[in-house]
Length: 219
Image 1 (tube, one colour):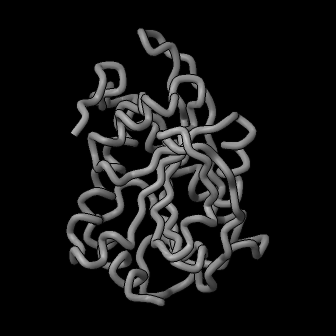
Image 2: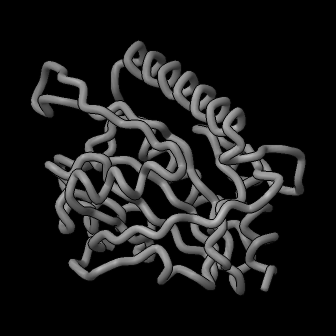
């Protein structure tokens, strides 16, 4: 396993900043879900899945980015896989490493025969700093199979829009210079390329694992 560089190593931040970030994330998620439900774009309801499941699966819009190994990537290439789609960045002090650790715990807890059916994707919201090499180094800390995705600002915005991911730069004092406020939602996509549920930050890994097994069994 490749070690994480000093710059991208997950670190602890000021608890007041973390609390404010979590409040921001919660407000953004609620506003997004309310807007999508009101417009009929997404319909949420009771299903076997956890998080905020859709009553009707929503086909994902394709997007094209570049992998952390410099290869072209299309979301449609993931057909046949159960995908956990996350938008974050390697300099994220708390939320991103926590989320990735939870996804790793969930994936590792399902039966081994299903694990190869599950692909974790992390799209950077910080293209200025997250080069392919930085992304690959960072994700290797969690699992070598995870795919990091980079691109231009416009390409990332096009990928984020369909599931309502919000992000913006926030200037801070210190060596990093800035942080990225962003929605910490994880999208669960089935083997047919359809969005099935959205997990808010700090979702239970056991519940995610249950959903992964359910979708991995689907044809």
